[in-house]
Picture 1 (cartoon, one colour):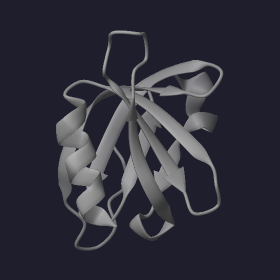
Picture 2 (cartoon, rainbow, N blue to C red):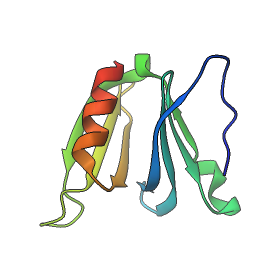
Picture 3 (cartoon, rainbow, N blue to C red):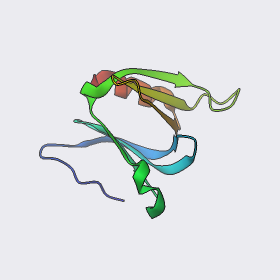
Length: 101
């Protein structure tokens, strides 16, 4: 899996993730110095790919995917859209994304 980087764009962090949007979509969550990107693994799930610019982020909220698993991140856009991701080591993702906007 490879995303097209923009000029002067560097990958800061990347890891396995799941996009939770009624359907659970496996893929990679990628943070660069310019944006946040989710790339679906399966070809049939490519419509769930997400590109989130820091200027579009209103808030990042942690949540539990089950009653006891603290591994969810809810990225709320300025347009009110909620983008939910399941990640490992949620706190490090949360801190990194919060520094972007």
